[in-house]
Image 1 (tube, one colour):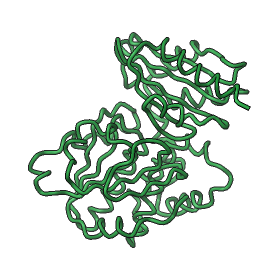
Image 2 (spheres, rainbow, N blue to C red):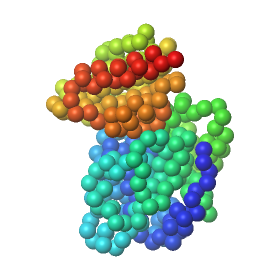
Image 3 (cartoon, rainbow, N blue to C red):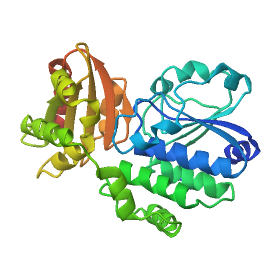
Length: 325
């Protein structure tokens, strides 16, 4: 992990007084954790902080934080020329209408995605970091600060989210484990974070999870597992019952599985596609070919068309990879 935070970025944050901290659409724990932790720290330094998000807050674990966020930048706030900090976002398209709102404002980007279209006046981007919250922890340290208990809990929350509760960490990540120890020392505990991420799921989410598992198809001799959710599923169970993290966890634990495809019908014309990998397949590169992005082991994109059509195109991409020497 790149521990070096750009000096100019640190200076901008230290000298700033008014901040807008913005995350991507359909936020997850890493996005929300980064925003809340950084915002809390800058507030402790005396800054005026506004947390912004395109929403929606559909994941059960982040719903308790939704009331802290503003869904638009008011014109009066923009006129005051806030310093904008965008976290966990590799392309302007991912912040929706906020892309127009922040035009002309000084923008800092803190991100860890391996693909996307760069933007921002000052950037701290490290694709080797398992979460943006770890980068935020480094930013706080570079500013001469130490996370308090609230900030440590949110930073640990983001790390737990993006690593599948630490399942995806490699053996040679000493910086990550050292950061975990610091956050634990500040008051965040694995037990506490596990409950934040995985407890309180509605029964409907368990039923929907069973449906998606029952539809799973083994492809390429079991190296790829593919499943889907329909529009009718969303109408029956609601978007808040979707639990892709649990679904990925179960499928990726299947013997011989190298990649997982999850296709969701969002409406009659649009699908969202989630990709996960266990081994050497770079799903971030695959998602990038379809206008999306993400990490080597976790990525996604939006698709205009049927789920059958995008599944066929994805299988062509994977087939070419499996044929490669």
